[in-house]
Length: 471
Image 1 (spheres, rainbow, N blue to C red):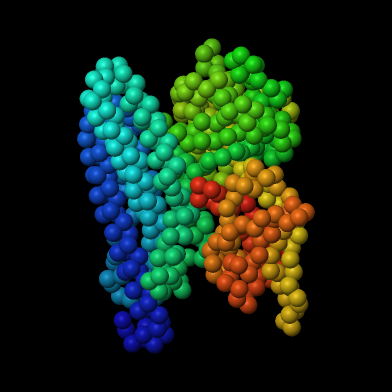
Image 2 (cartoon, rainbow, N blue to C red):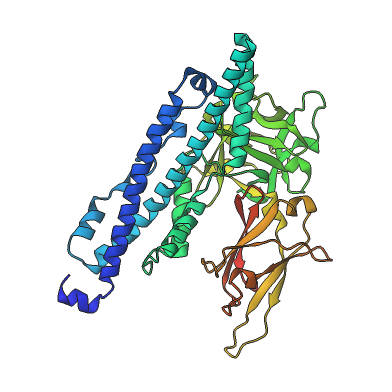
């Protein structure tokens, strides 16, 4: 470092140390990913039984290739040059920024591989248990095959329930906690808004979004007051089948859909809240492209692969033919418009909007600010707030929420989370900002950006509020 740089850019030592730290972490995560990939490969090759039981899952669904999503994320050459070369302020700043995004993705991929490995170990353990039981009881091959198939479904269900899969946003929060625990110099890391943008871009680059779990409405981006609707709000009693259409949002059970990710098939089942045995599907039998609700028999056309863009708008691809996606017929938004499948349009095709949907959680829909809780005025003339009340929520919805996570202007005030209050006598639910800033004096003020995530029983999170305080 030149004397000039040392005099005018005294933080260059910190910049270099931070860039080196980020690079080391990225390299460590990359090595860990390689090790996990090999361990997963060994598990999948450990016996023919698991290969046969998981024949519907490609090995690449369990593993991660380092360069498969965004290759330029991991082009470390120029970054290494910046760290090892002359300690110029701008180059070190570029290195810090250039490493921040891949660090999130690599941490997320490491977490995901660890999750996949836990699921596979649980499956293998159950397979070995069933095989031992078969030997003791002299089961026939047919009996063994049936028991193994049942055991696989049970093992996956239990393993998925007991092992949480972290999202990219959660990977980012883990990294922030890591930086805090190591007292890292983060003065020139990207802003909270930039980090949020990174997460959205990384999610959008992933061809299979897997983080929905619960009850949602499916809303057209062409008219956000209309959603997918079971025609006439009822099902044929025998086959549980009927057509699906677009209709004004009316909060009926025919417009709510339960999303559950099927690990074995690596795709979603989308069930109607009218009857959870009725499932959104491609009516494939007559070689047509119509979409309907029908009895769940786990055919490929009963599964959906979700792709998300940076605006968190979804494209729903049918697993039986992923080139076909959910589509509003003729880009029409009138009540009764038919819903069918259509080949995915190009980015510059105006009809692409007819293939994009917002998927809004029942929990998110229920969280509406009723009243802001204003603190006493201050000599600086600012309006301070210490909390809010949510409007009344249905007990079955509120019971799914165990706590809340709050950020003000992109940052935690202090405590990241606090347990949910029980509803007051009038049914409203209070959020006390004091509990999220360790009862410090730094209260939010009118005009601050407020984000609230509901933490569900399974410890997954869903954003329920993104607004300006006092609005």
